[in-house]
Length: 269
Image (tube, rainbow, N blue to C red):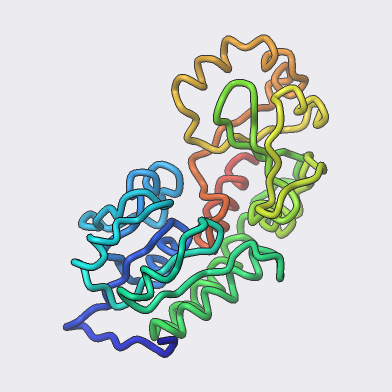
């Protein structure tokens, strides 16, 4: 089933999301999902748009709860490619809509626009989808205008332990936002198909004294170890006081994540 799903005020669509990217998209189109995989993780790592209070937890994104899905009888199940899930069990429960982000066919931001339109058409929310696309572009342009003069080069990282960082570059949604805002990415090294590279902390020496923007959350035990790390303390960017943490942004999200990231970047100026 790939047609438009029926919706009415009396019978709102019942949508279950197997991961966070499609959950973000569904909520951005004005629909509250009845269930999302790993709701705590979404609230910690994606944050916005906010999950509805009554949203049920489907368990791990790698192994969603099929029994609960059967009980919920959703009108549609949404997911994104890249999690290695066998689609067959979910298709037996309800129609399945998969978002093909990061498949290499086009830049993530452009693909987010196209997939937002596609999902909006399927949900009968075309107007909302077009509004979201226009609103996101306007938000990023406004954020660009708020930058004072030429923005300094910066690198965007996630920290999972005191010895390694994930740095985002070409092929990532975050790189697309940097480009739209006219900000140079200080990290020019190779990235994987998801648009990031995982490397030793010491490799950040390559960016010199450029600004480092670290995405929250950083686990408390990691923060403590980083503060005690001489390796970290001796990096040029750290010595220069050029490390800033910003609230969580889901790096593999859609338009809402892009707009959120742009707002945080503008606030650093």
